[in-house]
Length: 250
Image 1 (cartoon, rainbow, N blue to C red):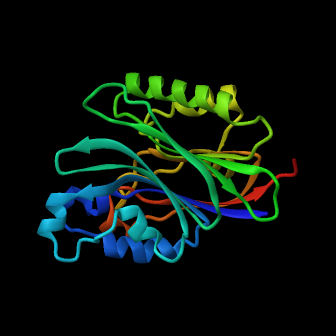
Image 2 (cartoon, one colour):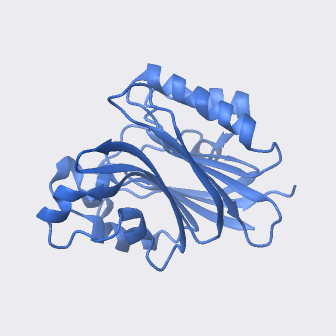
């Protein structure tokens, strides 16, 4: 079985520096990636002020608006909650989501983070695919704590022979996390597997920092791509990443 994966920090549906509301363009171009499963970060679940300010602000949560008719299954993990709304991570899927749970891994009260964990029923396979969407802290101490929570959850909740994808915005600009995940979980980073290094994904106009990742277990990586420059640089400050995966026999 072949599987197309994409991960994207959508910056709450706004362009870099919050200059323009881009959620409609985001939906149009997200479809062009042809992904079976999409891992999204900074997804606006609700924002009362934006809804009042913009006439074309979607009436439904962003994850529902983006999923539309392309991804019939979706899950949302609400992380940051404030007076006028909330945002978090989301997973959109062409295939049935059997279960979904969001684990709070916030390192402190001022930067709310979570691990969104879904079990997805893949066609032609009896094994469930485990998907975890992450957005880690800006500071290294917080990231160490959150990677520890990620490793602990996978050890507890994911069978050793189950296919696994962990994707999102790791904020790992010093490239310290990959070895820890490889040693503890035998995860391989898709871009490192194909190109020797994780992808440069930030800022989207001219990517310099390697912040976003796709880690896999139980798959071969056939193709990877960073989608940067126009029109992606108008949509968000991060560039989306995509990977074509091939499921290995059990």
